[in-house]
Figure (cartoon, rainbow, N blue to C red):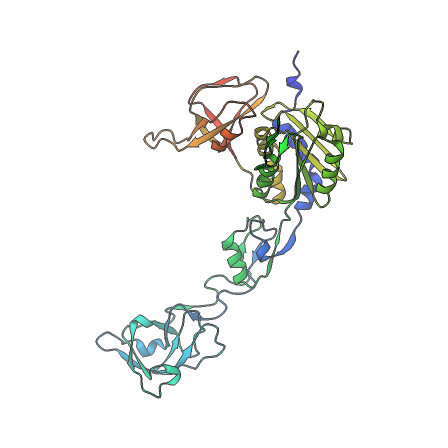
Length: 425
């Protein structure tokens, strides 16, 4: 008699993981103030309201001349208006000459508009009348304006962009370059953001060798620590340690001590099954609240969770495919919740070919999505093409996959063209 029906489903086990990480979720729901340079990819914890109007003052949209609109109302190419140039103003200047009747002030983009002027004439709509030796500041004594301009033209006024008190960035926004530009323009030196969970990663196995190093008999190149650290960073975590350990208890215990030093969570990879050298299960399995047992999922059946020095530990299987699938299905949704990011939702797709699946376990089939057939206007779903068999050792072929197709536990076969759910990797 099989014990598969007694195994928890991936969704129920994910809720156990969520409960296990409740202290981390509670801390992550608070906020921390970071300088702008450190805020990229973080999630804003509170609405950012504009403390000031933007622009801050009336300034020029163009390089040209600040004038009174009444003086140039009759200007034309055939009958240009001649104005006396009284000076120049550049961006950053603290003062500028006043513009009175029949006068103009040369102005650069972003410069404050002089008192008395109510519009700007772009430089391309003007020509120089003369440039005598006594021209002030190197500017011509007079300028010819060939085009009429109305009051307010080519001016930027306070509040054109945003008014003080207006919402600028809502809480829950994942901060990107454009958000930092807005915050800096408002004079903000930092933002209140959701804290990034600090996570340590430990990959275990006496057979593991660092990539690039020569292999001995029975050894393999280690990929799990890099894979999990990269996946955690992509979810918004700060990875505080990336360690490897043999199957020696003392070495693994030392790795746990190091990884938990400043972490909110430790993720271990490997040594969670029922073999003789399952060091993770052996060291962590008898602690209060520990759980090491398979779940109804393939790949990724062996799973575990425990704690070390008051830090929660989530223990994933060691096969590289199983580890990444387990992270994607079981841990990633909880991590995204902790950092305040939106969950990654499955998409609907159609299978490109017939598939089979073992009964009693939810199967996660690695697949690649292709665009819908544009010639068929009746079906706009993409196609999901499996990239390998179900074996959890097929790690190289997983590089071609961009989704996991979920096959329910009570389904043993699906025909080509069947509509399925595909979870983006």
